[in-house]
Image 1: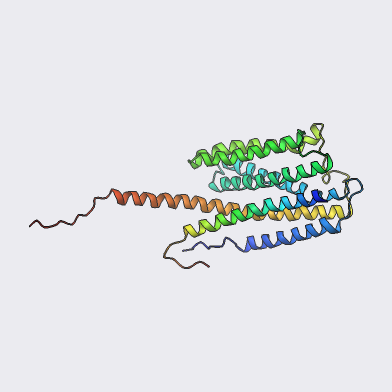
Image 2: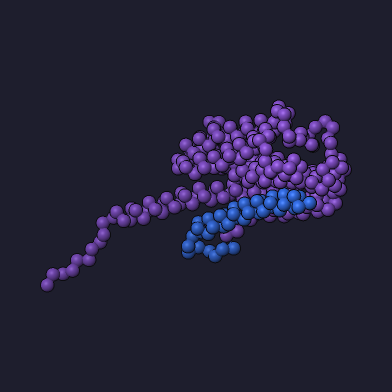
Length: 42
Length: 252
Protein backbone atom coordinates (compact mmCIF):
# COMPACT_ATOMS: atom_id res chain seq x y z
CA UNK A 1 0.00 0.00 0.00
CA UNK A 2 3.00 2.30 0.60
CA UNK A 3 3.79 2.25 -3.11
CA UNK A 4 0.23 3.26 -3.94
CA UNK A 5 0.34 6.21 -1.53
CA UNK A 6 3.78 7.23 -2.86
CA UNK A 7 2.55 7.15 -6.46
CA UNK A 8 -0.58 9.21 -5.70
CA UNK A 9 1.30 11.74 -3.58
CA UNK A 10 4.15 12.20 -6.06
CA UNK A 11 1.72 12.68 -8.93
CA UNK A 12 -0.26 15.23 -6.91
CA UNK A 13 2.90 17.05 -5.83
CA UNK A 14 4.18 17.39 -9.42
CA UNK A 15 0.86 18.74 -10.72
CA UNK A 16 0.33 21.11 -7.77
CA UNK A 17 3.92 22.43 -8.01
CA UNK A 18 3.58 23.16 -11.72
CA UNK A 19 0.14 24.77 -11.32
CA UNK A 20 1.39 26.99 -8.49
CA UNK A 21 4.43 28.05 -10.52
CA UNK A 22 2.30 28.90 -13.57
CA UNK A 23 -0.17 30.93 -11.51
CA UNK A 24 2.67 32.77 -9.74
CA UNK A 25 4.34 33.66 -13.05
CA UNK A 26 1.04 34.81 -14.49
CA UNK A 27 0.25 36.98 -11.47
CA UNK A 28 3.74 38.48 -11.47
CA UNK A 29 3.53 39.40 -15.16
CA UNK A 30 0.07 40.90 -14.78
CA UNK A 31 1.40 43.10 -11.98
CA UNK A 32 4.41 44.17 -14.05
CA UNK A 33 2.22 45.09 -17.01
CA UNK A 34 -0.25 47.17 -15.02
CA UNK A 35 -0.04 50.95 -15.50
CA UNK A 36 1.66 52.46 -12.46
CA UNK A 37 -0.88 55.29 -12.17
CA UNK A 38 -3.82 53.19 -13.33
CA UNK A 39 -6.73 51.73 -11.42
CA UNK A 40 -6.12 49.49 -8.44
CA UNK A 41 -6.03 45.73 -8.78
CA UNK A 42 -9.28 43.91 -8.64
CA UNK B 1 -8.90 50.42 -22.25
CA UNK B 2 -8.74 47.04 -20.50
CA UNK B 3 -6.35 46.75 -17.61
CA UNK B 4 -4.95 43.35 -16.70
CA UNK B 5 -6.25 41.85 -13.49
CA UNK B 6 -3.90 40.67 -10.76
CA UNK B 7 -5.72 37.37 -10.74
CA UNK B 8 -5.62 35.37 -13.95
CA UNK B 9 -8.90 33.60 -13.34
CA UNK B 10 -11.85 33.93 -15.70
CA UNK B 11 -15.18 32.18 -15.94
CA UNK B 12 -13.63 29.48 -18.14
CA UNK B 13 -10.72 28.73 -15.80
CA UNK B 14 -12.98 28.86 -12.72
CA UNK B 15 -15.38 26.32 -14.24
CA UNK B 16 -12.51 24.13 -15.44
CA UNK B 17 -10.63 24.40 -12.14
CA UNK B 18 -13.56 23.58 -9.87
CA UNK B 19 -14.72 20.76 -12.16
CA UNK B 20 -11.18 19.33 -12.14
CA UNK B 21 -11.01 19.50 -8.34
CA UNK B 22 -14.41 17.80 -7.99
CA UNK B 23 -13.45 15.07 -10.47
CA UNK B 24 -10.09 14.55 -8.73
CA UNK B 25 -11.83 14.24 -5.36
CA UNK B 26 -14.23 11.66 -6.83
CA UNK B 27 -11.31 9.81 -8.44
CA UNK B 28 -9.42 9.72 -5.13
CA UNK B 29 -12.46 8.50 -3.21
CA UNK B 30 -13.31 5.78 -5.73
CA UNK B 31 -9.70 4.90 -6.50
CA UNK B 32 -8.41 4.58 -2.95
CA UNK B 33 -11.54 3.46 -1.05
CA UNK B 34 -14.53 2.29 -3.10
CA UNK B 35 -12.82 0.30 -5.84
CA UNK B 36 -12.00 -3.28 -4.76
CA UNK B 37 -8.45 -4.75 -4.87
CA UNK B 38 -7.57 -6.72 -7.99
CA UNK B 39 -7.36 -10.54 -8.06
CA UNK B 40 -3.85 -10.46 -9.59
CA UNK B 41 -2.38 -7.07 -8.60
CA UNK B 42 -4.05 -6.68 -5.21
CA UNK B 43 -3.86 -3.11 -3.87
CA UNK B 44 -1.35 -2.08 -6.53
CA UNK B 45 -4.23 -1.84 -8.99
CA UNK B 46 -4.98 1.55 -7.40
CA UNK B 47 -2.08 3.00 -9.40
CA UNK B 48 -4.17 2.22 -12.48
CA UNK B 49 -6.37 5.18 -11.56
CA UNK B 50 -3.59 7.71 -12.08
CA UNK B 51 -0.83 6.31 -14.30
CA UNK B 52 -2.69 5.59 -17.62
CA UNK B 53 -4.66 8.86 -17.43
CA UNK B 54 -1.52 10.88 -16.72
CA UNK B 55 0.32 9.15 -19.59
CA UNK B 56 -2.60 9.90 -21.92
CA UNK B 57 -2.46 13.60 -20.97
CA UNK B 58 1.28 13.53 -21.70
CA UNK B 59 0.48 12.27 -25.21
CA UNK B 60 -2.29 14.86 -25.53
CA UNK B 61 0.13 17.67 -24.63
CA UNK B 62 2.65 16.61 -27.24
CA UNK B 63 -0.20 16.05 -29.71
CA UNK B 64 -1.41 19.64 -29.21
CA UNK B 65 2.20 20.81 -29.56
CA UNK B 66 2.57 18.98 -32.89
CA UNK B 67 -0.79 20.29 -34.09
CA UNK B 68 0.15 23.89 -33.25
CA UNK B 69 3.57 23.46 -34.85
CA UNK B 70 2.23 21.98 -38.10
CA UNK B 71 -0.40 24.76 -38.27
CA UNK B 72 2.34 27.34 -37.75
CA UNK B 73 4.48 25.73 -40.49
CA UNK B 74 1.51 25.84 -42.87
CA UNK B 75 1.93 29.21 -44.69
CA UNK B 76 -1.81 29.96 -44.97
CA UNK B 77 -2.45 29.30 -41.28
CA UNK B 78 0.72 30.85 -39.87
CA UNK B 79 -0.08 32.88 -36.77
CA UNK B 80 1.63 33.45 -33.39
CA UNK B 81 -1.42 31.78 -31.79
CA UNK B 82 -0.36 28.38 -33.12
CA UNK B 83 3.14 28.85 -31.75
CA UNK B 84 1.72 29.78 -28.32
CA UNK B 85 -0.51 26.71 -28.41
CA UNK B 86 2.51 24.56 -29.31
CA UNK B 87 4.65 25.79 -26.41
CA UNK B 88 1.74 25.42 -23.98
CA UNK B 89 1.21 21.83 -25.13
CA UNK B 90 4.91 21.02 -24.90
CA UNK B 91 5.31 22.37 -21.37
CA UNK B 92 2.13 20.81 -19.98
CA UNK B 93 2.99 17.58 -21.81
CA UNK B 94 6.47 17.58 -20.24
CA UNK B 95 4.94 17.93 -16.76
CA UNK B 96 2.58 15.00 -17.37
CA UNK B 97 5.46 13.03 -18.92
CA UNK B 98 7.50 13.51 -15.75
CA UNK B 99 4.52 12.42 -13.63
CA UNK B 100 4.13 9.37 -15.91
CA UNK B 101 7.78 8.40 -15.40
CA UNK B 102 7.59 8.83 -11.61
CA UNK B 103 4.30 6.94 -11.12
CA UNK B 104 5.39 4.28 -13.62
CA UNK B 105 8.69 3.81 -11.81
CA UNK B 106 6.90 3.31 -8.49
CA UNK B 107 4.48 0.84 -10.08
CA UNK B 108 7.42 -0.98 -11.67
CA UNK B 109 9.11 -1.31 -8.27
CA UNK B 110 5.90 -2.69 -6.79
CA UNK B 111 5.13 -5.12 -9.66
CA UNK B 112 8.49 -6.04 -11.18
CA UNK B 113 10.78 -5.37 -8.21
CA UNK B 114 12.87 -2.70 -10.01
CA UNK B 115 12.56 1.09 -10.21
CA UNK B 116 13.75 1.15 -13.81
CA UNK B 117 14.46 -1.23 -16.66
CA UNK B 118 15.45 -0.51 -20.26
CA UNK B 119 12.12 -1.73 -21.59
CA UNK B 120 10.97 -0.29 -24.95
CA UNK B 121 7.96 1.59 -23.50
CA UNK B 122 9.92 3.01 -20.57
CA UNK B 123 12.93 3.99 -22.67
CA UNK B 124 10.79 5.69 -25.30
CA UNK B 125 8.92 7.64 -22.60
CA UNK B 126 12.26 8.76 -21.16
CA UNK B 127 13.39 9.82 -24.67
CA UNK B 128 10.11 11.71 -25.07
CA UNK B 129 10.72 13.55 -21.79
CA UNK B 130 14.29 14.40 -22.86
CA UNK B 131 12.98 15.68 -26.21
CA UNK B 132 10.41 17.88 -24.47
CA UNK B 133 13.11 19.39 -22.25
CA UNK B 134 15.21 19.95 -25.37
CA UNK B 135 12.24 21.65 -27.04
CA UNK B 136 11.79 24.03 -24.10
CA UNK B 137 15.55 24.72 -23.87
CA UNK B 138 15.71 25.42 -27.61
CA UNK B 139 12.93 27.98 -27.33
CA UNK B 140 14.80 29.80 -24.58
CA UNK B 141 18.00 29.91 -26.62
CA UNK B 142 16.58 31.68 -29.71
CA UNK B 143 15.49 35.32 -29.48
CA UNK B 144 14.02 35.81 -32.95
CA UNK B 145 10.33 34.70 -32.77
CA UNK B 146 10.25 33.37 -36.36
CA UNK B 147 13.46 31.33 -36.02
CA UNK B 148 12.32 30.12 -32.59
CA UNK B 149 8.96 28.90 -33.89
CA UNK B 150 10.57 27.30 -36.96
CA UNK B 151 13.26 25.39 -35.05
CA UNK B 152 10.93 24.26 -32.28
CA UNK B 153 8.33 23.08 -34.82
CA UNK B 154 10.87 20.59 -36.17
CA UNK B 155 11.42 19.17 -32.68
CA UNK B 156 7.63 19.06 -32.12
CA UNK B 157 7.16 16.89 -35.20
CA UNK B 158 9.93 14.57 -33.94
CA UNK B 159 8.17 14.38 -30.55
CA UNK B 160 4.87 13.47 -32.24
CA UNK B 161 6.58 10.62 -34.10
CA UNK B 162 8.09 9.41 -30.82
CA UNK B 163 4.60 9.49 -29.23
CA UNK B 164 3.30 7.16 -31.97
CA UNK B 165 6.22 4.71 -31.54
CA UNK B 166 5.88 4.91 -27.73
CA UNK B 167 2.15 4.17 -27.91
CA UNK B 168 2.63 1.09 -30.10
CA UNK B 169 5.81 -0.03 -28.31
CA UNK B 170 3.93 -2.76 -26.43
CA UNK B 171 2.65 -4.17 -29.74
CA UNK B 172 5.75 -3.76 -31.90
CA UNK B 173 8.35 -4.88 -29.34
CA UNK B 174 8.59 -7.54 -26.65
CA UNK B 175 8.08 -5.53 -23.46
CA UNK B 176 7.50 -6.00 -19.76
CA UNK B 177 4.91 -3.23 -19.85
CA UNK B 178 1.35 -4.45 -20.13
CA UNK B 179 -0.70 -3.84 -23.24
CA UNK B 180 -3.68 -1.48 -23.45
CA UNK B 181 -6.32 -2.01 -20.80
CA UNK B 182 -9.19 0.09 -22.05
CA UNK B 183 -9.08 0.66 -25.78
CA UNK B 184 -9.38 -2.87 -27.11
CA UNK B 185 -12.33 -4.93 -28.44
CA UNK B 186 -12.78 -6.90 -25.20
CA UNK B 187 -11.53 -4.74 -22.28
CA UNK B 188 -9.98 -6.69 -19.41
CA UNK B 189 -11.48 -4.30 -16.87
CA UNK B 190 -15.06 -4.13 -15.58
CA UNK B 191 -17.35 -2.76 -12.89
CA UNK B 192 -15.91 -0.35 -10.32
CA UNK B 193 -12.43 -0.60 -11.79
CA UNK B 194 -13.67 0.47 -15.23
CA UNK B 195 -15.82 3.28 -13.78
CA UNK B 196 -12.94 4.60 -11.64
CA UNK B 197 -10.55 4.48 -14.56
CA UNK B 198 -12.99 6.48 -16.70
CA UNK B 199 -13.35 9.04 -13.89
CA UNK B 200 -9.54 9.31 -13.75
CA UNK B 201 -9.44 10.14 -17.46
CA UNK B 202 -12.11 12.80 -16.94
CA UNK B 203 -10.33 14.29 -13.90
CA UNK B 204 -6.87 14.49 -15.46
CA UNK B 205 -8.41 15.68 -18.73
CA UNK B 206 -9.93 18.64 -16.89
CA UNK B 207 -6.64 19.33 -15.11
CA UNK B 208 -4.89 19.24 -18.48
CA UNK B 209 -7.39 21.69 -20.01
CA UNK B 210 -7.06 24.07 -17.03
CA UNK B 211 -3.25 24.00 -17.28
CA UNK B 212 -3.34 24.56 -21.04
CA UNK B 213 -5.53 27.66 -20.73
CA UNK B 214 -3.29 29.18 -18.05
CA UNK B 215 -0.07 28.31 -19.88
CA UNK B 216 -1.41 29.84 -23.11
CA UNK B 217 -2.33 33.04 -21.27
CA UNK B 218 1.09 33.12 -19.67
CA UNK B 219 2.69 32.99 -23.13
CA UNK B 220 0.53 35.95 -24.24
CA UNK B 221 1.63 37.93 -21.17
CA UNK B 222 5.31 37.05 -21.65
CA UNK B 223 5.20 38.22 -25.27
CA UNK B 224 3.57 41.47 -24.18
CA UNK B 225 6.09 41.95 -21.42
CA UNK B 226 8.98 41.45 -23.85
CA UNK B 227 7.43 43.91 -26.33
CA UNK B 228 6.68 46.61 -23.76
CA UNK B 229 10.00 46.09 -22.00
CA UNK B 230 11.79 46.60 -25.30
CA UNK B 231 9.77 49.74 -26.10
CA UNK B 232 10.47 51.31 -22.70
CA UNK B 233 14.20 50.45 -22.97
CA UNK B 234 14.27 52.07 -26.43
CA UNK B 235 12.58 55.21 -25.12
CA UNK B 236 15.05 55.40 -22.23
CA UNK B 237 17.98 55.08 -24.66
CA UNK B 238 16.55 57.80 -26.94
CA UNK B 239 16.08 60.19 -24.05
CA UNK B 240 19.72 59.61 -23.04
CA UNK B 241 20.86 60.47 -26.59
CA UNK B 242 19.05 63.85 -26.63
CA UNK B 243 21.35 66.85 -25.99
CA UNK B 244 21.06 68.08 -22.43
CA UNK B 245 19.77 71.55 -21.80
CA UNK B 246 22.45 73.35 -19.90
CA UNK B 247 21.73 76.32 -17.76
CA UNK B 248 24.16 79.03 -18.69
CA UNK B 249 25.75 80.65 -15.67
CA UNK B 250 26.39 84.36 -16.39
CA UNK B 251 30.08 85.29 -16.16
CA UNK B 252 31.06 87.91 -13.60
